[in-house]
Length: 493
Image 1: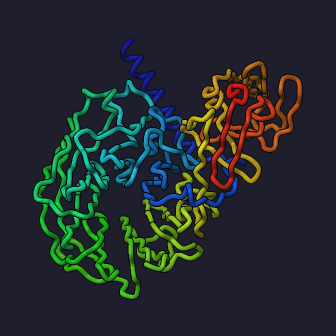
Image 2: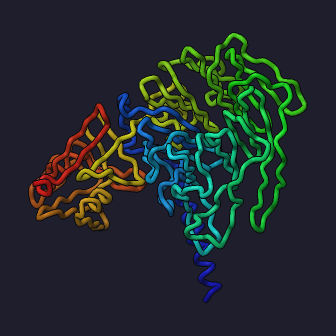
Image 3: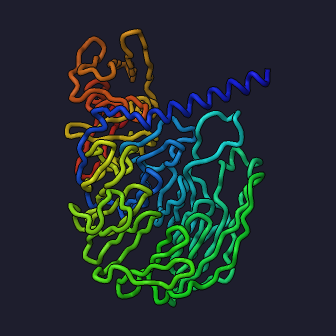
């Protein structure tokens, strides 16, 4: 019996993986995914973006973190057990608030520093055995033992925190949810990196860490890694990088570094070679380096890129407003404009660029504004959902099952050979509808829908007007603030 159970679980895991992969490789576009972007208001604008391997994380002014793009291996950290492969619009990462700094490393390692000095990790997670069939995420989890953190840096297998006193702490990445699989893997606990003080910036990649001192010198080391039952990597002590002096900013690519000096000039250093100046005509204020390319933000708010760029073109990136911050994924680029909007270009098969692909093969060659991050409030409380909420020109599509559960309404599904019907019952009123239909029903009364119900990331969504017309809820859509408010007027009396 045990052997048969193991084979069945193996088959279940394989089927689950194949289904998720198929959804990613052969995406079925829906009208909900074809809606136009909205301008981002100043009050809800973003201030920083980080690119991962086919996904994006963004930090908003209000201290919330939003993610979109690939979720094939749980990169976004929005569901403990992953049910969909991509997010086609920004999803607020539940449990993260008061965030001041974010970092993305490796394929799915995300870190954030809070205003209170704590550090949090979320993203892809491993399973201890085949008995846990499926794909899992680590939901936001506090790194115990790290305090007074100002910024963070995520490597492939470890994390760094720059404390307010100028020291650096490191720890091994959490591989599995400690609350569930505590006995399966014990990660290396946080500890100070010896010999580092007066640090103003940290970067991480692979197993390498680099730190920029207040005096402009750069120091590098290799982190130790002990992964139970697999392999061990011995760490090294920090040593000064020869040739990089008077730096104001650094960016790591492989085992090489880009540096930015106080005059806005770019330098490149690699092992065994002297540092050399690059792009002398540019006045640069931010550098983001990736394995194949480098992205440069000038003091005038323009972007330049060189190497094997995400679109194949080098030089100035055109068709952008004034930019204040940049981020680079493995195959896509993202940027924050002065009004707080996010712009994306490059590969976009998982919507990592944040908008519709404009060319065959899932590419965005001309930068386009990403979809807006929409806040939803139900009866005065922030609506928590792992599914995208997407605005169109005429409505906002909301996940009806999750909304029903939040309201305390009854939600049911009826399937036949020809159609699938959905029914919501709430305080004596009943609405029913079919997916992709132009009409719904309140009891026996027909309701003409302003927009058809859709399927977004595996969740059935409806235009918010149906909740008002069919259930009598009081709904307000503020398109300027990108806030949808749903309230039960009877409950408020």
